[in-house]
Amino acid sequence: GENVEQHPSTLSVQEGDSAVIKCTYSDSASNYFPWYKQELGKRPQLIIDIRSNVGEKKDQRIAVTLNKTAKHFSLHITETQPEDSAVYFCAASTEGGSQGNLIFGKGTKLSVKP
Amino acid sequence: SAVISQKPSRDICQRGTSLTIQCQVDSQVTMMFWYRQQPGQSLTLIATANQGSEATYESGFVIDKFPISRPNLTFSTLTVSNMSPEDSSIYLCSVELRESYEQYFGPGTRLTVT
Image 1 (cartoon, helix red, strand yellow):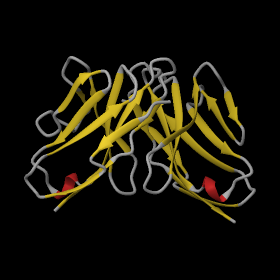
Image 2 (tube, helix red, strand yellow; image 1 turned 30 degrees about the vertical axis):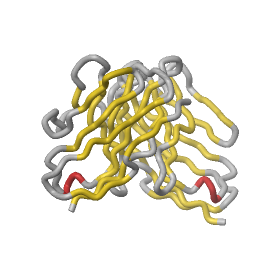
Image 3 (cartoon, helix red, strand yellow; image 1 turned 90 degrees about the vertical axis):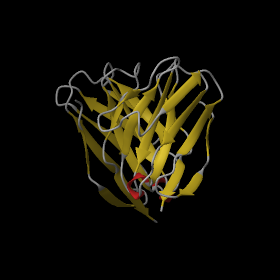
Image 4 (spheres, helix red, strand yellow; image 1 turned 45 degrees about the vertical axis):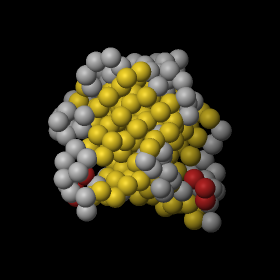
């Protein structure tokens, strides 16, 4: 089955710097890759997603890139702010979202220091 | 997105008892899921709640331990049966939107078994 590896497990940056989180997946049939942000004590929130027919997607300070050949995708946060501090999870779906069987990475704890 | 509620938000239960968690969404959705998130860890899919048929369980989860109901397109329940301290965790339901395949999470139920 699908396996998703996520790195790094922790990331500390200064406010205003960029942060990059990387994930790799094993199943070449995966074609849907969402990213979730989870603040302490709260539910995971979908922040951005990408499908395999697209190489990059951007939403304000957040961007996601996908390399299907290498089977990895990355989350880029620019101009980080203290409120970006949270745990970020990547996920992959082997069913393109129609069956919703998301496999999650282990998460990255991002700390943004003011 | 969708408005998802769960009840109860938290509970403390005794070993050997059972707890039923309810998940309600404000619109009809095809796919509903139940996840478990142990403290400081990632999300693990327990099962897909199928409307009108038996739930589909992931490896390591069985119906006798985690019976699931899905009587209609807006509601599902998860029961944690014969609980032990190892079942202490956060249980989250999620729904997949038909139009976008985006998956959204409920607020979670924090379960402590003593």
